[in-house]
Structure formats: structure tokens, C-alpha cells
Image 1 (cartoon, one colour):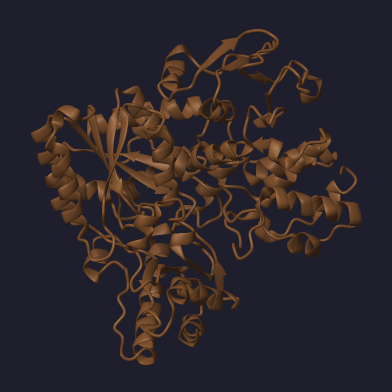
Image 2: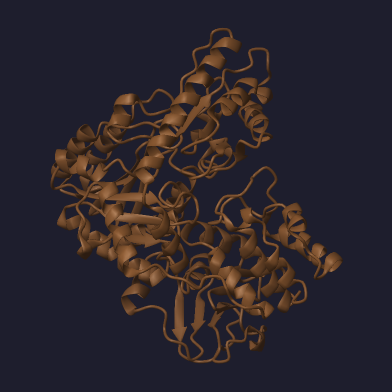
Amino acid sequence: MNTSLPAILNSFPKEWKGTTFNNANLLGRETFSKNLKTLIDSKGGNITTEDLVDLGNAEDYLRVSSNISCVLEHTLASKLGYNISQVFTFSSSTMPIVAVLLTSPTPVHLYLNNNKAPFTSEQIDTLKMLGCQFEIHDSAPEAHPNDTVLSLGNAQGNVETFDRSVVDGSIETNTLYIHNSNKIKSSDILVIRKRMSTPLTTPAAEAQLQAIAGVPVTADTKSASEASLNDFYGHLQTLSGTKVDSSSYPVCFTAGLPAISSLWLSLIGNGGADILMASTAYGGSSQLTDLLTDRSSILHKHTFDITGKNDISVSIRKALDALAADPSSLMPITVLFVEIPTNPDMKVPDIAELSAMLANYEKTTNKEVVVLVDCTFAPGSKVLQQIEAAAPNLNSLAFISLSKSVSGGFTTGGTLVAGPSSGSAALLEKVRATATMLDTTAKNDQLLILADNHSGVEERCASAYQVACQVGEVLKQSVKTHCNNYDMDLAFPTPEQAAKGFTSSTFSFNLPSVQSGSEKVNEGLAQVFVDLLVVHPEFKPCVSFGQNNTLVYATVPATSTQGAIKEEHKAKQAVGGVQLVRLSFPPSCDVDAVSKIIEAS
């Protein structure tokens, strides 16, 4: 492996260093690793960029896995004669521990092995509220045949020195090694990593590979200046609609879901919460919430239905009224978690009406209310300002996945921004402490990219919205022309909503069903349409949006972004048996070429 590693490092394809990857034929980590081994065995040190491109992609999004993190995990696994399923890198020093604690069916014995304790007594109490059963031992590992033994790296930092008959898993340099796959299940660890953390970031993984290969370490050597970071944090506050306040700067994370995870854990530490969210919210947010509510008796999930013709404000009001009918059953805090615009329906509630109903709910139930707005599709909407204007005392947080428009798609990241109330700021500080415990705050390489790319996001979003508007009209007219005058709806913010800042670069739609087609034909129609689009270089089969390039991203949400939600909820997004297609547009592209491809498809 070491003889081929310099060649691999010199030949990384450009796309491998991105955040989203072609999802037409995903391999998974294990198949990717197997193919990489075959390539190394056959070509040794003569591996080219074309060879690596031909390997395909392990996953479609860096938060799940990147090809570069897989190369590192393959390399580390090979040194021990392990399968890649036994090695997981994390962009966190503590999440490898938490992943084992959350998934182990037996009590865990964590041996520090002369290392510093990773958690305070208060943090341990919070983890135990999630059902984690563990003891921490300040000594070398000892056998516990009926339990799970986890050890931090020894003084020499060499995983090969552990007695694997005693130690079921060990952690070295942000990496979890699974020595006993009967005690620690790799499939469970993967779910925790992709929902609460990320693999090692690409620059960090590349730097570690360079060190292993014995070549000069050129990756991950720079950091953003304090001044540029302050400018970035202030800009996030301005985008979200609250004043620049250095005493309550936003908390930034390695990805969006770790931000939500830290918030939910903070609320558990505060005594619990009822979380109200759309039944068809982003699948990652839904699965993460389910993961934690299943483990905590004081975190409850409730849903409202925004599918089809359902009015979002009416649906939220009904759900709030149902909760308010029995205030004695409620936790101390109620969180309304709402995407504005929603994904993939692109619905936008009236903010004044929404704020008023939440203020009334708070008064009626005597419970603290927090409105958490996911404004990733419209990061410059200044939604916190709109909420404050309608309900000045309402606690509010803005959530933005920085992996999208703010970074231009050049890194992953997530952020929480506090609204103007003192309660909002206090909650954000608890989140900051939780994120520090989980070590899921954004890393130096991510902050550098974000500091370099956040400027101009308002203009990029406005331009992408205009591109979406133009292509959307072409699409609707094409369907009308070729499908018996069918008037197809676009799930897209109205001009009035866009004027209030909700300028999404994305729209979704249900193509008309094939009247003579079978149920199977109509079920597959959305994917067939996407497949016809993505053979053209102007399109990319991809789950993301907010890209600062010239490509149109195409996906079927039911099998991608909403893949983790219940089938019964996904079924409600279909019309005539045809699922939604989602197209996401860049700030500039060849609109004529894109329009012609859409019409031809």
C-alpha cells in the first residue's frame, strides 16, 4: 500500500475534493475499498487519475463518506489486516466514543489508558439520559467478557499493541478501530457518524495520508484569520436577521446535522422538549430526531403534514392545538422546527401569522417555546428579524446548512444563529458547550473555506433564483405542449414570498402520469426523467443545492433527501403515482441549453 500511496495522492480527481458526488452508481465503503485493493494490486505505483475516476464513488455526500476518507480508512485497515468496515474516521475526538455508547447493547467500559477523561460529570449525566451505560476507568484495559471494552490510544499511540482478545474497540487520532465486530456493529456506527458527525474532512484526511506516505504534508496547513472569522460570524447574523453581536456569535459545526444533534442534546440537558416538525422534513433531520427520541424519555417528536395541497400554516396550527389540548403531558420546552422554504415542497408560511400562533401557544400552555427555522434554501431571508417584528419575546434560532449556498458547495458545515431574545442567546450558549463536548464544531480547513466564500451569497442566491424562474417557465410550457395541455404545478416560492427574502434556487414537481402506464411505470417515471437529464454535462445527479458552479443538480427526493422518512409519508408526495423531481440551479448556466435538454427529455 505504501508504494502506491504517493501515486494515489498525486492523482486524486478534482471531484474527490468536493462535497457532493455523482450518485448514479454508488458503491458503498466496502465495495469501494475492494475495488481500490484490486487496483493497487494490479498497478502498484503506476496509478493514474483516470484509474481513480473509474473506481466510482463510495457515497454521494461527504457527510456520509468521501472517496478520500475511504482511501485513508482503507489504508489504516490494511495495516492491521482489517476490512474497511472495521475502521471509521471522525472529524471529532469524542464522537467515536459516543457512537459506541449509543449503539452498544451491553454496558461499555471505557479505559483511558493514561489519557485525559473525555467528559465531565455533567456531560456523563447527559449521555446517560440517552440510555448510555458506561463506566470510565483510569487504567489499562481489562477483560469484561459480557460487556464492551473500549480503550483510548495508549501512550505510544499504536493501535497494534492492544490485546484484541480484551479490547473490543479502540480510538486513535479521531479514528475508531473495531476489533470485535460481534460487540460493535459497523452498520450502527455508520448511522451515528452520518447523522451526528462526519468522517475526517478531506484536507485533514489528505494530510494524514501524506504523513503515512512519507511525502511532504501540504494539505490542511492554513487557517482563517481572526478578523476574517469575525466578519464571517457577523455576516451569518446579518443574513439571519439579527444584529451583529460578538458576545453571541453563531456556533458553526462540521455539518448541518451535528448542529441539530447538539441542540437536541442541550434540550435533554435542560429537562426535555417536545419537537414539532414536518412529517416529510429532510430525511437526515427526521432520522436524527427519531434516533435521539428513541433513546430519551424526555425528548418527544410530533409531526404536521404539509404534503400535497395542505396549507403549511393550517397544518402547524392543528398540530399546536393538539399539543395544547393536554399541557400537563408536555415537556418544559416546545420546539417548532420548520424549514422555510420546506424541502422539497418549497412552502413558505406567513411569518407574522406563525409567530402569533406560537406566542399564543406559549401563553395558553405556559410552556417555553423555541422556533427553529431551517433557512438553508434562503439563507439571506433575515427570518429572525421577521419573527421579532411579529413576536418580540419569542425565542428563535436560525439554522443554516453551510454546505450549500454559503460555502458555494466547497465544504460541509452547519450553523445555529440566536435570535434577539435573551432566552435564545442562553440556549445557544448551552449548544456551544454541547458541541464542545461532542467536538463537532467546524474545523480549521472548513472555517478557512467558509471565510473565503461567504461574501456574495445574497447575490448568488438571487441569481440562482432568477435562473430557476426562467427554466421553470420553460418546463411548465413544455409539459403543457407535450402532455395534452396539462397545467403542471411547480413547488416554488411565489414572487411575493421571494420579495420577502425566500428566493430558493430549487423547485420540485410531479410530472403527469402516463395514462396507459402501469403502476410500476409511473412509480419509476421521476427517476427516468432524471436519468435522461443527467447524461448531459450541464446536469449532475446530486442531492445538494446552492452550488457555485454552472451545473444543474437533479434528484428524486423520495429516494435521496427524503429516503429515510416513512414510506407512508413519501407516498403522499406522489401525484397520480408519480414522485417528485427536484432540480437545483446555480447562479449562472447556459439557460438555453438547459431548457432545450429539459424539453427534449
